[in-house]
Length: 380
Figure 1: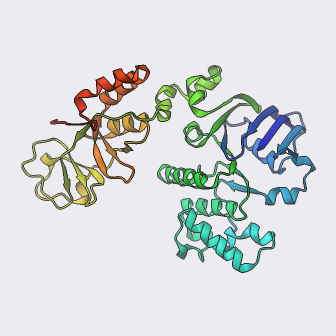
Figure 2 (figure 1 turned 90 degrees about the horizontal axis):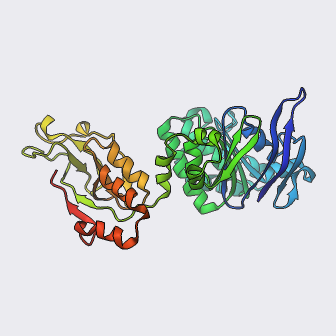
Figure 3 (figure 1 turned 180 degrees about the vertical axis):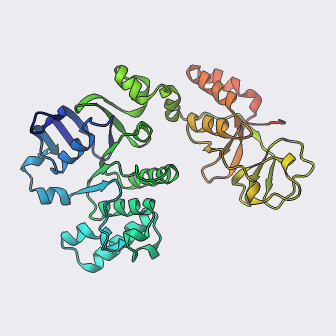
């Protein structure tokens, strides 16, 4: 557990970066610091490992005042990930990952084994171990940075906008991989970002800071979206916070429609529907095609891949996203293995949202026409 008690940072000249900050980052959870530029996010993060010293107040780690701890020992016990990864350019990927274990005096065999294990856990191929950072993509470098922070198995990790320097697709992949890894490891993490969507996705609790390092509100993401404490927080989390809050509402049984499908190489001649879903040999969705625009067999370049795919076990936001983003206006729903289970329309998801506060028996009645498995035929 990390505890801030009345922490202030004032620089020479009178500038206050952090003002009387008090909050707790619970053990094994992700606490995200978010806010506009100049709100003291990074300053607060760096005060935890004493890269910046507080002017007043106390920061404690599992009940121990960090100001009374040896700086080197403190930092070696905390993983640290920054934007652009901060890798040593003259060292290989494997040597970068093994940096802290080497400082702690581990033997070379143990360092190599641990480094290779972590590269695998963050999703990097074994052949990348002997490359240098300049030979990696931005996303790969960030994965190496996370692996390096985890190398000595620290209980605490500090992450300063680690995914902000990559493109949106890679960023989402890194976020998903990070959450999966955290689910296995259960580290105590303080994560800094300027992106409220990232904060809501990753945080077990989110602390919104005002300019000047003043804590505006701290709560779990669902409560933050539903109950912003004032206009500043409401504006910062966005006018679409009601839509965002749907990601915290699990999807009830969806009224799924069976979907006509084809595979690549199959002809769509004679199919009168405006859109047809293409799947692979394991019945996993690949994209949509328009039969009227094709002659002959479906080729990979014919696929419309713009629509998102939602899991039946996911959130209402995921189901609604899938329906709204689909070129056919039918959201593609899959099971946890990625296999197609059916499609759903946006108005049907909205009906589920409307029904969220109704008694269970009323909700069940509203799906009676869908059949016992929640699936019905859709002729459109």
